[in-house]
Image 1 (cartoon, protein in one colour):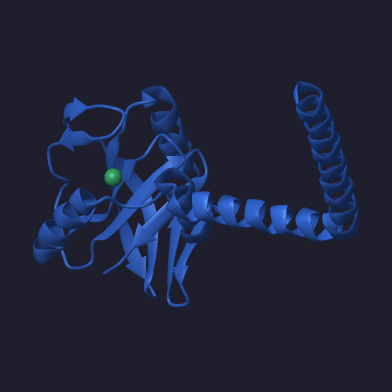
Image 2 (cartoon, rainbow, N blue to C red):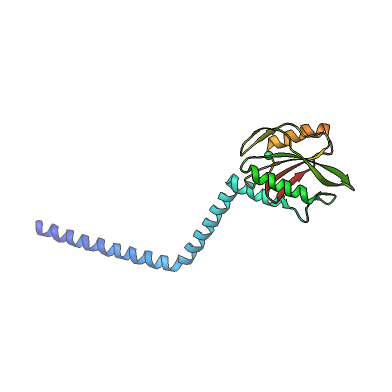
Length: 196
Ligand SMILES: [Zn+2]
């Protein structure tokens, strides 16, 4: 009786081994047959993950938006739109860059003064308001003179997008000076201006 049981057991083990081998062979042939589909699926999945992380990452998407909206000075001129250009004198450009570099990584605030000629803002004077408090993310200063054409501050980390505080400050200032533009300088030669 014992002998018979052992024989059955051996036979049973043998069968299990055979089935396992067959499964492995089937899996290998299945993988070989469909491996290109697996490759494409993994690639698509990776692309979807990259796109989602790009869209959902605030820092990357903000930087992307900032790069699209901001622009460089060309011949000391910044084109705000088809009817409005800002033209800086050479000295003003140098002074802006110097102030930006000297204060980095802190924000600065400056008041640009000049004339409006044929709708274009010709800037030939800078007023430095008294800074009350400045950090890497904000600047509090005394207000600009009434003759200011552009109220400009810096964002030292290459992000030219205005904050809600920037817009609220600008809206208040615009009530008493309707020609006022708001500007931000987010690198030595990268700016964004609004006139709204
Ligand atoms: Zn700001």
